[in-house]
Amino acid sequence: MKRSAMLVLMLLPAMGGCVERRVTITTEPAGALVYFADEEIGRTPLTVPFTWYGDRELIIRLEGYQTLRRHMVLRAPWYDIPPWDLVSQAFVPWTYRHHDRRHYDLEPLAVPPEAVLIERAIDLSRQLPPPSAE
Image (cartoon, rainbow, N blue to C red; front, side):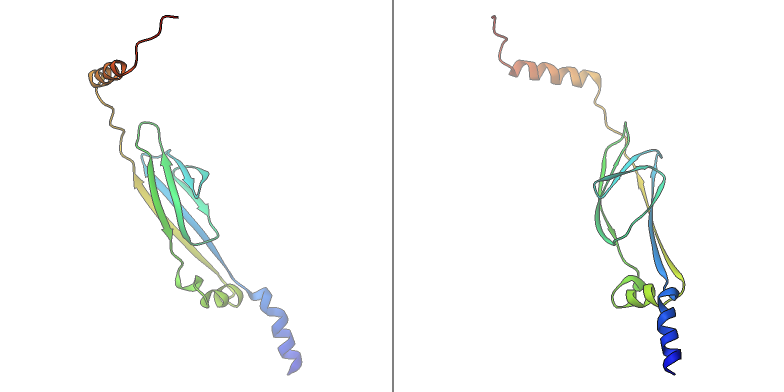
């Protein structure tokens, strides 16, 4: 009996499963630069692995479009919440795969007409003091 118990204890670590976590980010239009938790991770569409669930800041930039800032929450599935995470990661012989998918539609930049820009420039130049003649 002791020998069987010892064998089971020795084999338990080899039986351990794991959890693969990844998030896919897509945008319309594609090709936007993505910052995930203050780190540049690439251009859309992209899939990246992550280690921890929780809150992250997501910034998406593309020339000609408004910069998108979102507070992204990655929620843990039931098998990755204590105490179930101990069972799922140590004693289950298969791999859990969690794949979160997010899609964002980017808004084009609103560029004012040229006449409006010229009027703003004239108004601003009137607010400046005259140049000194030195």
